[in-house]
Image 1 (tube, rainbow over the protein chains, first blue to last red):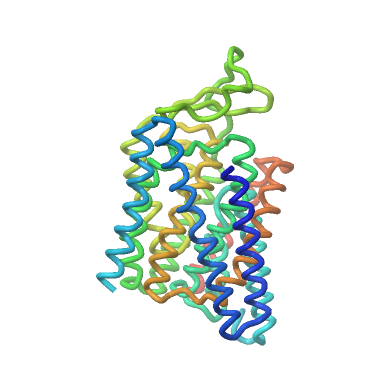
Image 2: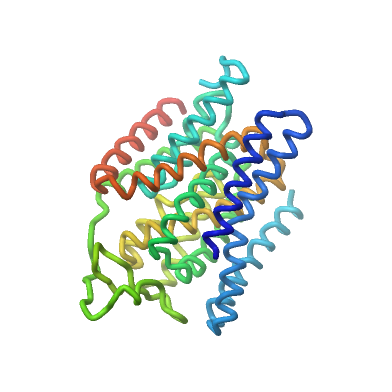
Length: 84
Length: 280
């Protein structure tokens, strides 16, 4: 299942990037941003999916580790937002 | 390299560089940013400006190559998540400190890391864990509640169990720091650390590192975007080149002889390091 939605999101990101490069202007910039958002968010989404899957399977220790990784990422975002 | 040419040629050049470096990065298991960031810095970009583009190429290459590796069952996700706790911590510190270093110092750091990566590529060894005839194809994969697993080596199933995890997580924070600082994936550090320090099989180490460099790079890219350092139009160009390059590189990796690939990659990295030092 992870492979399927990974493939779909990659295709969507690549198409958005290609259209953004061709159009330029405000629409192009919006499409470029969408491409980067889709691609940049994919690894984090995958960690979230793993946390849920392990939690469902009763693998609590590693579900907690995956959840901790997501919290750490949010913490980093918060720290940068505060310090910059 | 990039400054004298017109806008459209500059775009084509960025796509071509992203394609080439992601292909090579996926083949060698190093991630393409260690090549892309220095190459972009030879033109009209500083390393600090090229760093977010390096991260985009790492994520695209990681995801593109990861599809093939998921199919092979070579990624140990539990090991990846645990070691990423260290790497992501390092990446946060790296992003916060990135502006404190001069371009010259960053060039030296990247050159030194390129040499370390070259040495790692050249001396990396083959098989540590032995096949277990009692295990069948159904046992391939990672184990519930544990960091151990079984991987496929040709037609045999090989059990493995990583060691020295605490030391490993601490050293992974250094790889993460480099990612946050210079925008390179850190795979050239993570793969040798996983394989040599934590005794993960080389194939599992390379596949797992390919997955984890995407996570670290994703976090670092998010932080750089908040810092206003991402030029989205250039990022989109890198997406196009790196997705195609990562896909092609992972397909070529299955067909090519690993020792030849490692030596070629090592040679390329030494050239990059030399040029970086001369330029600095």
